[in-house]
Image 1: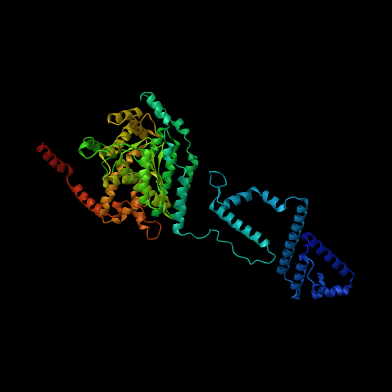
Image 2: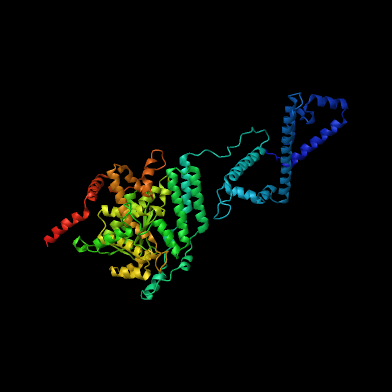
Length: 612
């Protein structure tokens, strides 16, 4: 059999009635009896339940318990104990009042006051809660707070949480010290990982090639005008292609990261130096994109990607010199005498399907997808875990072999190796300072696997010469006509010329210089490999694939493997996994470089002439 339980309000009313009856009895009793009660410190102030029954309410039980505790010691309570009792009684009274108020609200059918207060938080409380969740106070901006302010607010929040927790209990909670104002200690690797993650996150919205691409309508209009008018592409055209971020705020964000790297790791730290240069290059990349369609774009492009007038480490030979020398050699090569030619008859969807099969075999568990895309300028382009092939393009079996090595073994593999870094996370993304190494490695792998061919090499060389012509003042029409004279089809002429002028000034003198990095990178990577063999540092070679790196980064990264800052690369092309053959190649190459090259060539040249 069940009995209905009294409501909280009924219990409170019962407790008050009991207290009133006791007060009346005490008032009617003789004064001597009241004095004796006070002297004994007995529990007569609270009504004792008759016949051993339990108190009639929770409030009475608290009163009885309080009097029992007081009776244990005849000495008057100390000031501290009195203060504790007063606070305890205040909390009990507040609890009773909240209970009564809640009952009244429920009787009226309204919401409890607790919910109303929760909805009426102050603006400061809301900001603190958002900070605790990791959200920013204002969209797209970092909170304008010093480290001291943030630490003070964090300690204040901890203290408030503790106070709220203590108020929910009716007994004393032992005091504990607040955390150190400086926060918990951080290891070196934690600091590096945190700063690297900020770089990766900050660069996320930056899409250089996407930001400077041309609409298909530009090509249609150009050919409609019989290829005689400059494309109408200027600053206004690029303004329609939103960057997705505020350049000024983004540049300031990278500058702040660079300052924090210097503060946390110190200016003499080698890993910190790599990250700081990376952050500042991203800052300059943002500034370059902010001035698309103007000559200022070229000023930043030259700083970030270099110029055809830059010299190699010998201090004399320029990138332009390399282009002209290779142009003279490759234009005289008769491809028909080199071997079997391959026609381009494979459409983009079939090429994508074949590459998907090969990448599934090479990368195993990691999913690398190949898809057809309408927007890319080149025949193919790689991302972090994907490859795109241009819709409408036709490929030969040799082209597919090249894309497997170039895009898969190098570009995608270095992205995946960088993403696998638990500390050196910045290696997953490629700032401009890594472009020459990345593109040069990809082209060099084509050479080492004997997959490339003269016409493809000519395309890389012609890019150097096209950029150089634009740097010297040639406009879009001039470069387009030059490509025509070199035997390219008109659609190739247009796409090749767009690569040079995208982002820059179509009137000349301000190109996008990235295309000069390919052949330059081949030479620099070859020199790196040759030097590594000669100086017995072949252990450094695999770290060219640890992520997106520059040559000066490699020795630093290899030194930080043992302490866990850097993780060795998982995906390395076959000829770099086993360096036996490559080391012999480089050894003989070192000897060839000591010979007087021109005299050797002349000797065999005369031999060929005598043979007719």
